[in-house]
Length: 306
Ligand code: 3PG
Image (cartoon, rainbow, N blue to C red; front, side, top):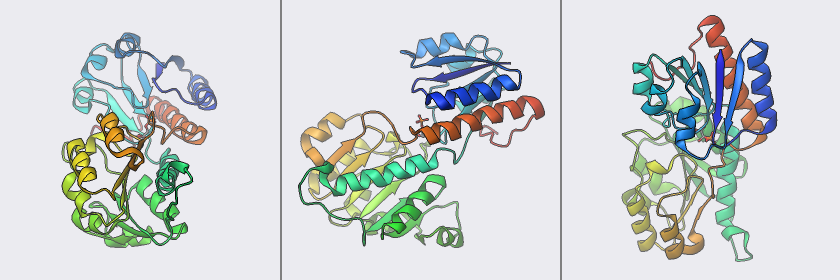
């Protein structure tokens, strides 16, 4: 089979080699499309692809229309909001993700961003410590749980909200369960967001929730920019000079936020949560193995468009 590795943000060389080794050992042919400048380059490259490995690359209906031989797309990572699942299903294309494989990298970055804000962008200004503060984790899945456990080791108190978990599961994951977003935001000195971008979550975090946060609180977003209501964020930061926002997913209004709020806001220049050698290898190789297994045995364990 012809497998296209399409990564606008390329994997580390070791991960690319590992992916190629796994796929070629199983008799597949690998074609690479890395750092492509425009979406039309991706569309043009899929013409004879039978499988795709992607990261945040956008698999739109146009891409699927241009790929008549395509049978499977594996998103090497967790979030699959970049894939048009409905169009994929309509084209008979199986879509999978590789859950958990890059979680540790994202969790470590969330902690790093908290320390960066607590220490005022690593300037000599007097900062604060994470120890003794309460961290709220919004969604206690693969990333959220790791953030909670690592923050606990730093001496933070952990609360978590996750409608898909029982209280017992949250407690066994090291956090105190809370049962509403209002309750979570009201008590959290740091609030780490780990919800996916879905119609029900897009724009769901903004003015009302931020205004509930305790004095001096920091909102941390390593999830998706779309879950934030950017006007509400701006308004809350305007009315509450004690609040801060740090993110790995740059908001569209970032220049305005920086101009208005200076070091109270920070966004990484490019999403880098999963950009470690380890996460690249874990997610990339998992994707390659899932494709080999799918073609060899029909295994659809990680299918997300059922
Ligand atoms: C994910 O959903 O797995 C992360 O957001 C990582 O995305 P990336 O592969 O584009 O870095």
